[in-house]
Length: 327
Image 1 (cartoon, rainbow, N blue to C red):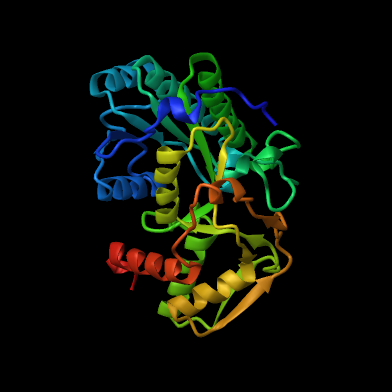
Image 2: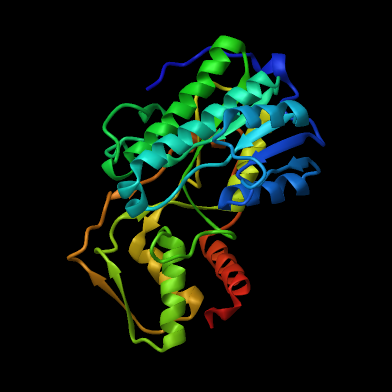
């Protein structure tokens, strides 16, 4: 675990985020970034964004120049190169180098521009493959990582250390948050690259559309996973910006998990598929359990508000609306 690094006291930096602040959301077109834009705008903040065609966040000089010119009150770093197991396994150089470049450019650029407040968003994949369950923040760097996404995880760990280093050396009010598995509007539903929940939604929808009698899923269905609606993540990020100024990263999850089998049954019900689920036990299950310890987040008074079934139904409705040709 990276050592605790002294930083500014809570009293010395309050208010941490003033009403009507100007906030730059890096990565505003992604699942997380778009949710943050919705939430911050609804809360009355002025949201600044730049598309990749306007600003390549891997390029340090123009990134710093933009931050100096726009001078936001805070930066939320949600931009990242992300992908599934196959992409991570076949392109580790890009996952390592692109994320390191983005983090170095944005975090260093924010400091150079005199921006007082920054939230860096990592991922629960930073934790060791065999971390204790639920996973506390203290598990960081206590064991080997999952080999299939090691490059991405190491880049995100470097981001945490960079944030802590700016706190120690410069007294910067910079913090880190580590979200669990996310889903919601704006998710990736490509069957080749998507994560499990959007993939299940699409699989069951298409099976219903095509009149299939069964859907075959990999593994036994016994692994347990935690899922958080991205709008709940956005609300948690606002709470952290408003009230947290600690050195350690903060896990962001719901504190509850379920089996993949239970998840599949819920998605089947939501989509209206009436056929059978067949489990192909010749395929791997993956890590038996992955649940975050959210004690630190809960101590700030935050509780997710969107139940999983409701969140899945909302996400399914969004996908149907966004892809009118899916049938």
